[in-house]
Image 1 (cartoon, rainbow over the protein chains, first blue to last red):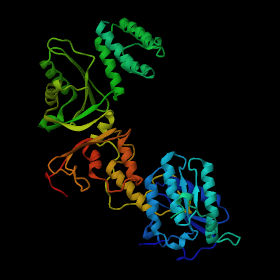
Image 2 (image 1 turned 90 degrees about the vertical axis):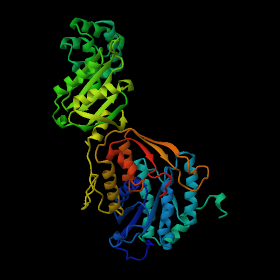
Image 3 (image 1 turned 45 degrees about the horizontal axis):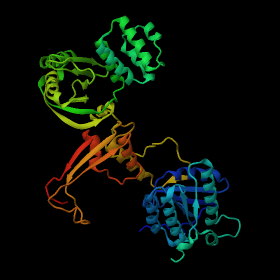
Image 4 (image 1 turned 135 degrees about the vertical axis):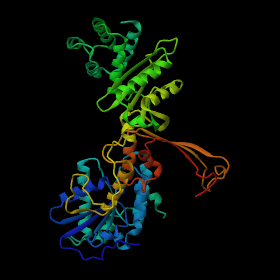
Length: 183
Length: 337
């Protein structure tokens, strides 16, 4: 099993790499554009993928990935299933503040609420934050990009203040809903 | 203009939407320019019809001209019902050299031999299609112009398309087609749909086909290039899926097929339920796919990875065999695989 590991490569100067994983490949390109266009100070690389594991042949050209983002569309069951299966291909070091969930389509219907709960439970059990994003408007995408960049800078060690990914994640990680507390 | 012609004219005018009236009347080519200008297509249909009838009266146009109007409208707007495709088989030696004149004479002569009252109109279009309008009568009754059958055939191809086709006329029509095209048998192509052009494109392969190639080069499909800092991990995989979709369903604008039907006459295989697992009885069922553009939908599903490849031959044979009705049976009764 080809695990993706965060510390097996040397970081590059003033560079951060974010990996966007979305099974449908709808939101990720727009989000990626917004991310590279918003950031002017730091060199941000974006890698797009449908699911993990990543193809082996790209292994050498791929820089060190500082933040893994799972994009879940609540409209589709497959989207969530793909994320669930992908989580196994991440080395455990990533779960110390280098993984984050982005949820889209959270506004639709009752089914979405069920899935939302499942995403929250998933995130809580992996100590990751969950962001809700609007993918239909320009502002929503820009906002999501901004929030991801903030997390990315911390997890890539580019934040000027003495904040670490581990410290940030303990503050931002998703708390399970009260009725789920027992697990 | 007699009563029958008026009734038919009324039917046709009712069918044509207001915005298409002017174009249709122009291509009808029976009224003079002044007469056309004096007609107001925005009027209510009944008033328009009265004016039109009086113009036709001035020109002494009768039933024949009216049936031509209907045909003109159908040729421009063939999506008027369900077209069925048939395939002519066993061509004789001179089938390749049949000309339109020969075809017309033989076809008409043959049907007129069988029926005392029948009205046949035929027109050859620029793209080679022969449009035939047949109003059926019999030895005692006049042709019924309210329910005409339309036949479209492309010379030197084995395909014929029927619209409003009644089984009681089948043997006569087949016979006339055999004589006119010099074939000796015909079979259903198991292809039907509202869009005549889609059926034609499908059976004659007039869409952009993609064939498997050994040297796959990554071509830039969508025009917008990515920012240099953005890289796709699964680019090659996506390219492969796109290639697979194109090989199965074609590329570019696909024929607008609206449905595909699979009739299952197979045995249920599985060990979940004992009631379904009856070894002697067939598990009968019908699976229908429908969409405004079915092939495009399948293409999209495969290309975006919603469906895992490879494409099942059941779906890809829609384009490969030019069919959209399939009966699926077990190859060997009772066998499992």
